[in-house]
Image (cartoon, rainbow, N blue to C red):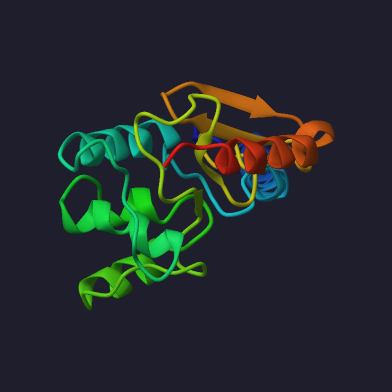
Length: 192
């Protein structure tokens, strides 16, 4: 008896087509996941993820004051330039000084030239001229844009602030103007 002639198995062709479809569906799912991630990531982290921690900056300020007669950095052309003195004394790096909104490369370029930071190259609002003996209700630093601990968006207008003696506090947008007015009064009432 002769062997039957070879006949291709249609199930192999179907398996290949099914495998291709599954691969395409998988790619579509992965692509969709990346698209969703990009969609949600951008508004959540408008300047990208960053761990420029106000607590770390406060510790650098505290160490500076410890070695400068209880006085925080001051005396430069602007508060951001005075804050840059922390870098010169090797108490923090460019990444911390940039805050959460300024690209690291910009800050590194300024500091590498030996220059001090300015309002456009430092993402921190720094209240200069304070001492460790001032009223502990005075805020010494906060993020200029109002971002969270890792650079995430807060409700519009909310700000995390660092008080002079190390407490961190969230100021809601509805209280921000009153907070700023109170801060001006506390600073004016300082005994110099």
